[in-house]
Image 1: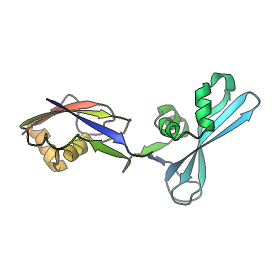
Image 2: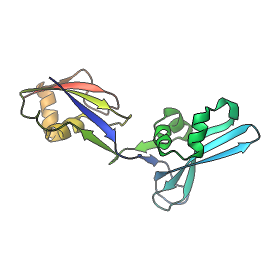
Image 3: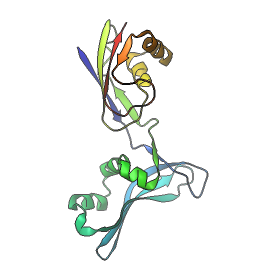
Image 4: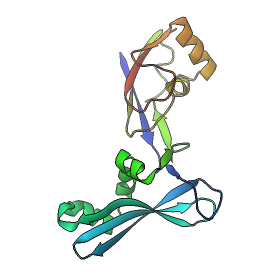
Length: 182
């Protein structure tokens, strides 16, 4: 029987970027957008606040873009400061690359296992699905979901009792499955 786990975000992650006013390297998304028009060209930014000093920085979303080439619903969401749009845009690889930022997902996600009734079985088949592209170590997920220590999970991997089609060392942000034999 296949058990489904879900890695889901609990809040918007922090933005990793150097502050120009203080030594902090973390910003939190304010949820506010700034849209500026110059004739038929539009600029749009996401405002982020330094966690150390509160200084505001802008993350470029649109730069000198013709108004007609922007989807009307996107423009409406920018004007309405849609909080869902903030999360979507921070996960967009293009926005992160353009602004040279990374995301800090510490304490911004949770693992939903659907209960602990599966822990007493001899063989467990688990499908892990990511609701957002959250980079997490599979060893940590398995340890948390099965109530084991990370060292025990590492031992099970080396003994061949924990197998998966993907490499379980390092970080993953995409769906995977694994089988645990006790």
